[in-house]
Structures are given as C-alpha cells and as structure tokens.
Length: 123
Image (cartoon, rainbow, N blue to C red; front, side):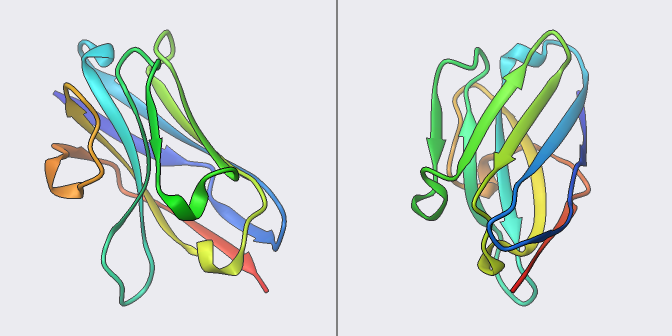
C-alpha cells in the first residue's frame, strides 16, 4: 500500500513560486501514476497535473499550462509540483494522489491521498 505526505505549501505573493513535494511510502512506487489536485473553499476538487509511473508522460489542466510542472524522483519516492507565476486564483489546499497504472484527470480514479498542503497567494 501507499501513504502520501504533502509539504511545501505556504504564503506567496502574486507572481511568486512554490514547490510542493509528495513523499510516498510503500512498495513499487514506479507502479503508480501520481496526480495533484486542488480544492478551494466551497468548491469541488479540481485536477491540476499528473505524471506516469516512469515519469515519461505528463498531463495538465488548462489553467496551469505553462506555469506549473509536475515531476518525480523515483529513487526518492517523491513527486513534485513546481508552481510559477502564481495567481490569487491558485489559492487552495493541494492534494497529492496515487493510482496504479496510467494517470487520470478524475479524482475518483485515485486510490491513495495525502492530507493536503495549503497554498495561499496574496492579491
């Protein structure tokens, strides 16, 4: 099984950057695709980015393309989300997720979730 712990959130000004980390425990980390989702207050969980188990395929929501980059270091059992050019609209709790096989844009397809890390972008 897989346990996930997010870190790296915080307060940043508009236009700034943050890098989120998702540390995974468990067996066969490369078996799992990884995804990042966000949830703003009063809103549904929303897809941000995902990456395949090998790291050779990625997918992004339209609103983060060109600003955010997902990556992973399988030797460290860690996935990352580099966030640049942050906007107040990016303010949310960011969750890391994992699922076996190919990545998905749908949160219901993910089996394992972290506790989330708060990202706040000041206006």
